[in-house]
Image 1 (cartoon, rainbow, N blue to C red):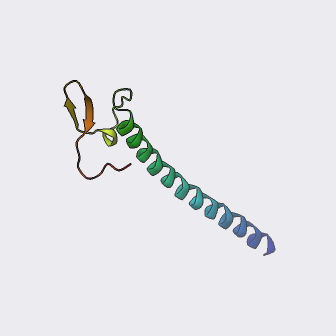
Image 2: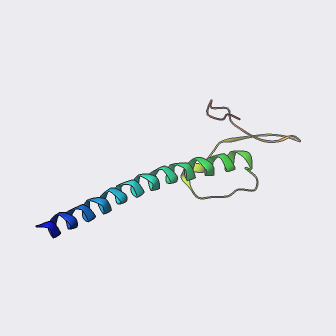
Image 3: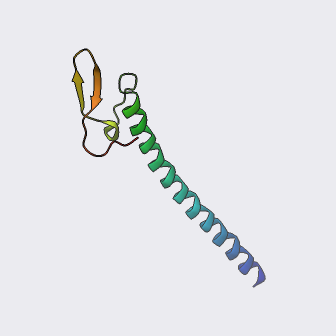
Length: 76
């Protein structure tokens, strides 16, 4: 009976660790998307991606440059 308890504890610990790791992966994936968006906003001419989360509308002012359309989302 003691072996069953020990085995259960190990399985329980592994499940807990997996849950923690899955949670950390979700947080990192969200941060990755946010960082890609930020890099694209800061460096629109040098950043290219097919990632739909990085698409942004730009306004070009002749002889001045490109600027993001103000949709209230862009903050520095």
